Image (cartoon, rainbow, N blue to C red; front, top):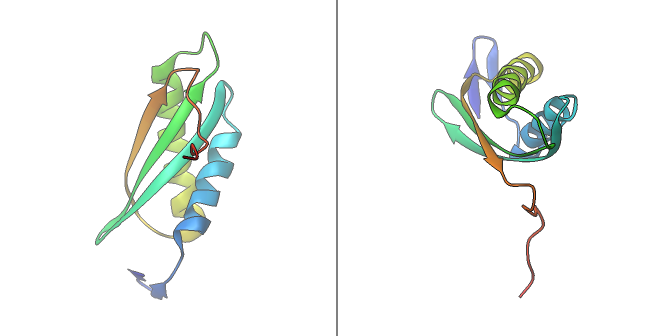
Length: 100
């Protein structure tokens, strides 16, 4: 729950993760992405786990992801984004959970 000037906002992590996914999906050079959301008293912290296409510059993509995700979360939810961390992974990284 977040307190806004006009009242309270309740939004679950699945909805926030969906906004992050939609934001990241429009970025060229991004092969896969996933996210982790942490709620803090003064906003949310988002970790975006990414796999880039070959030959893509990580610093430019990281900045674009941070800017786009921050803008979209704040615009569509009204929640303050405290931090967006972009974590890059090698091409062989698999997002699926391994079954034992």
